[in-house]
Amino acid sequence: MRTIVKNIDIIETILQIIHEDNLNFLAPNDSLIYESDSDSSTDSTISTSSNSKYNWKAAEREERIKERVNEAIRLLNEQYQSQYVSTDWDSNAFSYND
Image 1 (cartoon, rainbow, N blue to C red):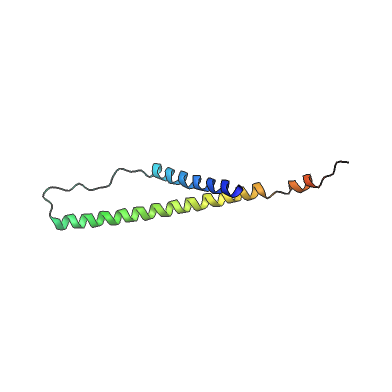
Image 2: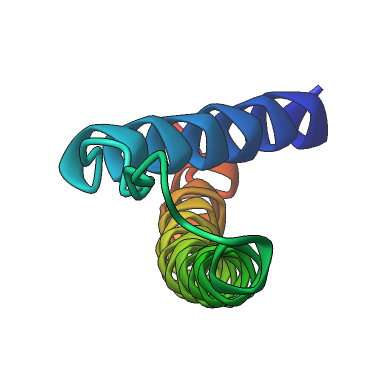
């Protein structure tokens, strides 16, 4: 049961990080406006440039999210370790009431 709760916490944390990233880095569409008299070679160049910019942004976003998720999971693991690794139980379990 403890593992299930931990995994749910991890999933919720991942979703929260993605949601926060969406809100923090939400920007207006960077699409370019083409003039009606532009030729196809110019359109092709702009389109390629725009696609590489998009791919770069997507890769940057993915890396940013991975770093935040890894750090959050590390903190959750530390929290769970400290929560369940305690020596208080042995003093309670082996204390005898006279």
